[in-house]
Length: 176
Image (cartoon, rainbow, N blue to C red):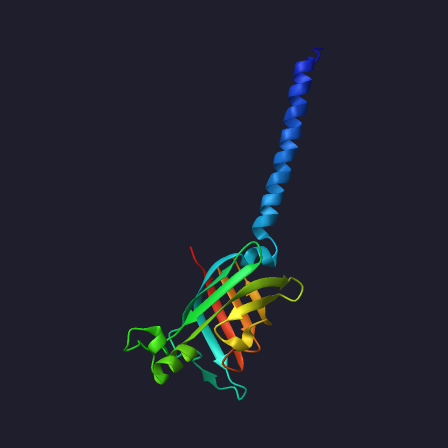
């Protein structure tokens, strides 16, 4: 019977250790890919659609229609969101500080920008936006809650307190 040399035993031991490490790494990668709800949210999202409803159930266009926007959620817990719609009008003066009453009204009705920190309640599938500053000053230093569902490429949320009143159901797509 042939015996194994010390070199062969060491080589097998090292191979076994490396193999076990690779299995652990691959399992960790697979879990991270599926990951927590918070991990799934990290990234940049483009606005796809919104259905805003008043208390009486009627729908409205919160930004004047054709709303475009971006939502960014980073790994360190910071977010920013910017929305623009057709309620905005070009300024005749070509100077944002010299808009007419109607032009300024269009800016207020056709844009929303806010930023801050965010947290996620995994159990309740809730995204909490801790707003530090907003173009809509009523949201400064508030928490905005969104009930969410997220897949690899789509984020849907419901807001029970839309900035234009009522509720909003919003769909975002992950940008590439």
